Image (tube, rainbow, N blue to C red; front, top):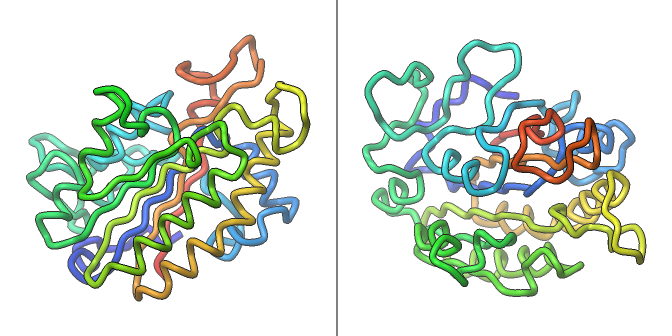
Amino acid sequence: MDTEINMNDLIGHSNILFVVLDALRYDVAQEQFTKGNLTNFQIYLPKTGWEKRYTPGSFTYPAHKAFFAGFLPTKIGVKITPRLFAADFQGSQSTTKNTFLFSENNIVKALQNRYYKTCCIGGVGFFSQRTEISKEFPNLFEESFWSEETGVTNKDSTKFQFEIAKKWLSKIEQNFFLFLNVSAIHQPNYFYSRSENRDDKESHAAALHYVDQQLPYLMNAVKDKGECFCIICADHGTAYGEDGHWGHRNAHPSVMQVPYTHFKI
């Protein structure tokens, strides 16, 4: 992975794509890569696969709050992970000459103020815009989309999300920041591998495979718009009974260790 990337050279010139694979575990993601089951993701991943990192939040809300302020998942075995972009504040030790610093409190507003078009395509409930808390993230963006079709209960959610992305991109004539919260891997995901209502690591992996199958639809649309810097990661993982833990919003390694990658196309 290119850890020396200078975001200051990209902002204002490059489009930005940020895809969060909600609830994806690192171990499942890397196992599927190793088995050769992620034929589309592997185009954009290093030869070693996903990078294992620690998430700043054990569930969607705190993780995304941190992401938009510039606190992306941190490296393992490194004392301080240099940040790609960051809301400026005194005492920060993780900003470098390559970090894009902004005075706004989130990257979305910062890019809008630099003439980027911004769009959010939501997936899980925190993007549903049905309650005040679920309006918070979508309201950061100039345009935002969510429906039952893009939500966690629809087996074809990723297909609908990427179709919305392609349609939105076709109308954009300036730099863009496109954010997608991919809902397919989040529970319930049993329907990607079985008919009964029981999620486990097998259905989790099957959901990731489904997203992988849809990926070219999104990436081809993004490539058509020119140079783009891409971040793909999970916001947290999911426990399936390990050490008595289930779901997320706990600090079990299956929740806190997440897959991460970034790259330019």
